[in-house]
Length: 431
Ligand SMILES: Cc1cc2nc3c(=O)[nH]c(=O)nc-3n(C[C@H](O)[C@H](O)[C@H](O)COP(=O)(O)OP(=O)(O)OC[C@H]3O[C@@H](n4cnc5c(N)ncnc54)[C@H](O)[C@@H]3O)c2cc1C
Image (cartoon, rainbow, N blue to C red; front, side, top):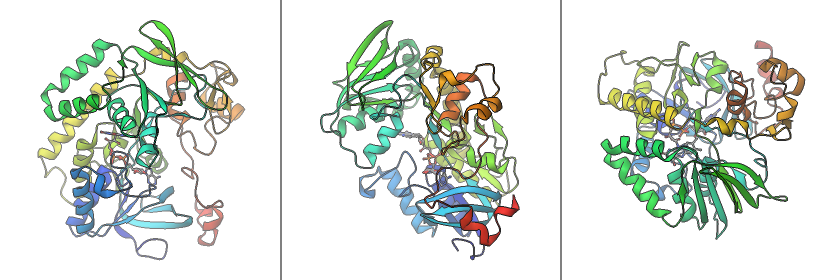
């Protein structure tokens, strides 16, 4: 069933995070043949990324068991490179490029970090906050390394706790918003005792480290590797020695594949209706690619999308699923307002600071009067290997440009000549 010569699957899911897994189970429970593709080594997405399944939280283990019991096929190390149409994708199956056909498509491609450039952000040892967490979940041990974490929002807490558990000497956690904003957000969580308990547990895990609000990175310094971070901390400048700096500014939906398919985007997220249908027939979307709102809402949206893609009548499920989705969306609205990047963060990059690391484009190379298209023509900004996946959200924040309209291939294929690999199938001539 996998690849060109197989018949189309009933439902193809892109992304094996909470949203993708729950949509796969919902569709398989309705008798559909379901294939899930994910570029990761194992199913689980960002929050349930793991090496040892037994070490995952119970809810994650239960979902992985449900997926197996439902007879869903999961293809790991499988990156979707292109969408020829809603029923035919080009996929890099770990180095073998092939087409995958389907009768219904569910996008559950999650979110990515928003990295706002500052002097020194490209030094080795500077990573995103979620990037540090991913490295730790993949086996990085920090063995007394001095770590500074700087960013915004609730993600700071689990990553700080994970860094300590991985042996870090966690020297500072910096939150860019003022104390009153962080406190008001925490008060809003009082109605959710489990979230409060979780936050307290994380804070206890890094209890020996200062958590400072109104505090953000202005620069990273080092010769060949980060050795010092400069912070603006409650109105004062301060410097902290470190071996790792994890810095980013929130998450944004991962919409590239949806954009290739022509799905409408609202703000920075895929537009969906009440049954998670996108504006393109035969394509549904669920989870953080439709707005950053947490794993509980991602699971609910996945189930709604899976049922709809399997043919359940729309609107027949006015239920707890929809309440969980609404509560997640409300949470997303609050996150976006409370933890929006402060304007100072948009002015950190100097003329020499690299903005697009694929094409080595610096801040000073961009004339602020240019349109995005002019900037691309003159500098190739956003046209390198990641196709703007990293610099796109930064450029949107810095210059007010629309998100980069991606071009295939999405990400770097594991096999070099991806278009050549498909020439026999005459794919290249179809576009
Ligand atoms: C880096 C990071 C770390 C996070 N850590 C936490 C945390 O510790 N705690 C927490 O509560 N929330 C965390 N979140 C938020 C968390 O991701 C969500 O709450 C939840 O996991 C969203 O589930 P999802 O299924 O929508 O997306 P995800 O879990 O992100 O799953 C999306 C999946 O799509 C796959 N994918 C994307 N594009 C392609 C493609 N072209 N081809 C094939 N596969 C593709 C990705 O590999 C990924 O596995 C994190 C988010 C990020 C981005």
